[in-house]
Image (tube, protein in one colour):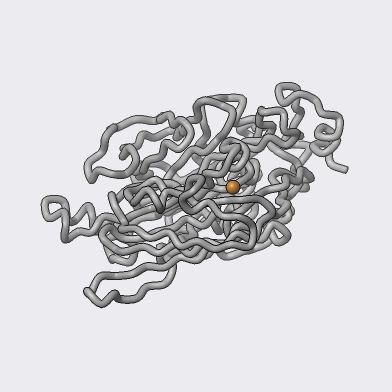
Length: 374
Ligand SMILES: [Cu+2]
C-alpha cells in the first residue's frame, strides 16, 4: 500500500496530508518514462514529453505524489488529453451550412486520480474531463447524448441556445437509458464549457461531468482581424504554428466531506510534474483553460519566468489582459492564454495556481522548453 493510500485510509485532514517527497519517490517516478507518443488532434507537433523525467526536478524541492497512476486502466492519459480535441463528424446541410455532430455517453467509472487513490467518477465518454469539443463559429451543432450511467444526467452548454436545449431539469435532463439530442448554432466563438446540470448540481459537476467546449472564430466574419482568427482556427497553417493545450483545473472530494483532497489540471495529480509538457522554444503557445473546481471559491494559473496575454472567455480577438503572469478563475470561468518562450533559455518552467495548498495537493506542472522536437 502506498503512503498516499495509507493516508487516505487514515482520513487525515487534507491539510495534514503528507505527499511523498521527490527524493523518496525518485525510482517510482522514473517508472513513468515508458515512451508514449502523444496524440495531437490538430496536427501541431507539440506534445507532452515522453522522455524520462529530468533528474534535476529534485532541485525544485517539490513535494509530489509517489508512484504512478495506471493510465491504461483509467482509459485516458493526461499527456494525451492535453492535445486531444474532439471534432466530431461533419456533413453539409441542405442550405450549405456545416453540420457537426458529437456523440457523448455518460458512464459511471472508477478512476485513479493519484497513485492508489480511486475516485468513483461519473464521466462523459469515460474520461475526466470529458472530451474537449471543438467546432467553428457559425456551424450547426448536434450533440447526441446517451445516458448509460446510474443517475439522471444532462449536458448544459455555456453558449447561445433555446431554453429547451439548456440541459436543465425539464429540458434535456435524461434518465439512465435515455437519449437526447441538443441542437444549436456554434456561437459565440470562444473558450467555453459544458457540464451536467442535474441536481444536486455540485455533486454532479464534481463527480467529473464537465469538459471544454471551444468554438473557433470564422475568419470570414472578422475581416479586421482575419489573421488572428485564422491562427485560432483548427486545421489552418496559421493554427498549426501554435502549440495548443486543453487544460481543465479540477479537484476531487475523495471522502465526500465537501472539501477536496486532490487537485489537478486534467485530473491526475502532478501528472505534468512527472511528464512535463514539451514545447518548442520558438513557437507560440496557446492554452485553453477552464476552472471547474467545486467547494473552493477560486482557482488560478501562474506561469513561471514569463508573462502571457489573456482572452477572458476567449470571446475576443484582442487580449482582455496583457502581460500578466497570474489570472484567477471562479468555477466555470475560462479563458485563453497566449505566450512564448522564444527569448528564454531551454529548460523546465513551472505552472501552478497561486493557492499554494492546491499545488501541494496535486495541481502543479512543468513545461519542458526545448529547441526542437526530435
Ligand atoms: Cu449528472
